[in-house]
Length: 136
Image (cartoon, rainbow, N blue to C red; front, side):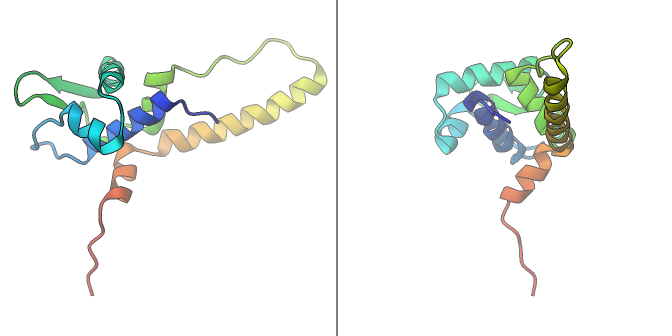
């Protein structure tokens, strides 16, 4: 599985947005850029793609920024990756028997990857980043 740098930056941006609550002010691009060492100009392009996919919403103005368009629990990692890198390429046409056997294995591996990405939400990942409170 290959994840582009752009897709990884998009995931980091989504995690940064997930840390804010619905009543918190929108997160500024500079905050995300500084926290994750993502060039601001590049981050703008990424956020525009995520906005086009309906994953983030923007607010203009002095107190503007970005926030998740829906709850972090309702956004899967697969959605973020697809928004940035597009859908997986379709399977190839008729193949020789030996190649078909290998292609079957590759498809099973891709299906397992997709299943993990589909069931992993941004909220789950954000929860792993949050400090845990210990009660003794």
